[in-house]
Amino acid sequence: MDAVEYLDLLLKSLLLAGVYAAMAVGMTVIYGVMKIVNLAHAGFLMLGAYFALEMFQRFHIDPILGSVLALPVFFLFGMATHWLLVRWLPKSDTPTLASLLLMFGFWLVLQNIAYLVWGNEDQSILTPLTLSSVQIGQISIPKVNLVVFAAAVFCMAILQIVFHRSWFGRSMRALIQNPYAAQIVGVDDQKTARLTFGLGTAFAGFAGGLLGMLFSFSPDFGRPFLLRSFVIIVLGGLESVSGVALGAILLAILETFGINVPLPVYWHGWSFHYLPPSYQQVIPFALLVVVLLILPKGLSSLFSRKWKAA
Amino acid sequence: MESRMKRPSGVVGWLKIILPWLLLAVLLLLPKTNPSDNLIRLLFITAVWTTTSLGWNLLGGMAGQVSFGFAVFFGLGAYTTALLMHAGHSPYFGFIGGAAVAMLASFLIGLPTFRLRGPYFVIATIGVTEAVRVIMNNLDVTGGSSGYRITEDQPFSQNEHYYSAMAAVALAVLVSTVIANSKFGLALRAIKQDEDAAADLGVNPYTTKLWVHAVAAGLTGIAGGIYARRAAFFYPGDVFAFQTGISILLMPVIGGIGTVWGPVLGGVIFGMVEEQISVKFPNLHLLIYGSLLIAIILLEPDGLLGLLRRLFRLFPTQQAKTKLAGDPG
Image 1 (cartoon, rainbow over the protein chains, first blue to last red):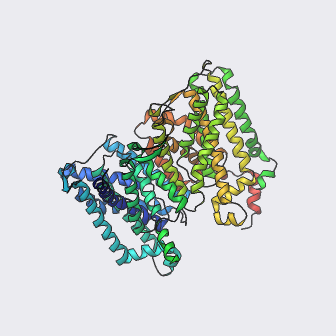
Image 2 (cartoon, rainbow over the protein chains, first blue to last red):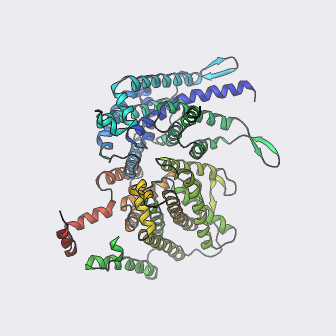
Image 3 (spheres, rainbow over the protein chains, first blue to last red):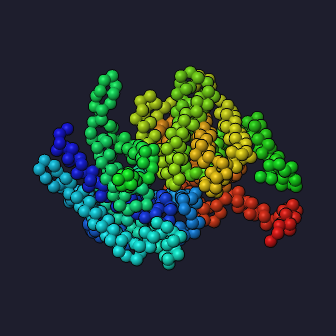
């Protein structure tokens, strides 16, 4: 392996990290405001992929545009879900048994509906972009990865503006920081929670469409990405949106390098072996365990600790 | 816990004592009446599921820690039993070995996650099934993804399988009852209600959760071993399936979590109905389970047992009436 190949892998993992961040950010805001671990996130991701596929096949809308269109549609869908199911849950500072089981049941329902509508065969979205690539020196990058990355970063940037500049964003941040104080100063927590759930769902649908352009999918599509989203938000410190970007980059780098770079193994002397590609699914879990053992408050705690020491 | 010391009173009180023993007697004598093989098989599988259901309930129902990863313990129990039997040990030694390995695995999940407050444990349990399945699919010793076969010298005895499954259920009920009536069970319920308050009163939430997780895993491991010995052939995509973990969690929730008999009720219903559902509505079983979960959480969080209790409250006994009358306010 020479330097160019490493650079190639690094670039690919950074491009992947963009989608991962968009995928995890929806879960972060919902956890931050409502302290609900949204297991139905996996179902929303999967539905987002099918939404982009249907838009593409029926109306010949480019899947990138289809993913962006998923934002308002899933926003309303998420608000409806909150109004129908989530708002009846008792409030708590920690995830409760009831909230976990409710969201899990809803995920099962979404999954089964997808099986009924689309069947269980693998689908993929193929556009002219899928097979073409851009050549930069010796590195070739698939165009689809670039476009997906650009869309993800663009929407994350808009989310940042909403988060910091709008009244809704401020009430969201207030509820994340201190729900009681937020209510005292006049934040409507039910309304904010409903909008937040809509926002989280919207980003799940959007990210699902983007992921559907990169990977093939079936109704069981969301599960591996559910765990990845969890790992990313744990890395980011659970409630911070900027932490999500950091976590996404770390996970994407480890996943890409983990199976493409030979690892040193000591077995009757040192030798280098590739990790079998199927082990890629184990990497997020291994990372989760390691992070919980050494950095339970997430990556950002590393920096704040240093700042405190300085 | 005044109910622990109270003598049984009234018809319901006596029924509560007699019914389990009656049930046990019927189940033990059943094979003598030459029932159909299918009934015995159905009762066997129901007993296996009920054991896992009771195991899950110790952790999820009594201590309030939701786990989606019990398939790991089920599968590890199955594989350990099979490997030990292959090495020439008695299957019963295999079951104990399966329980031991499952308990060790439970520590591996619990040690990093129970230290922390928050959703970490449940997140880890979602990933662990996936990770273990990938590893087992690639492990040569157990035949990888093509599965593992158990060969026994003795002839196939339907009744022996049946009795071992019944023994496992009896053990699980016994363990649950003992824990529910002990100081340990009190600590579990304290943790479920308020971890900080429990810690203030001298309960160590970390070690308590670790131990109850281990006990639950052990019971599930035994069930996995018993299942594997009868199935004689199994593969990682079967015993380590995420679906298995879902089934184990559904049963206590349907029956009523946090009690001893709720998970039994849920396990029996699930064991009897599962096959019918997967035959008659193969495309709808996730929808049925999902809607059931949503309905139970939103309408009757105590499950079927809670529903039954509510029905009985419509016809209060004399004792309950006097209690109500004596209640101030």
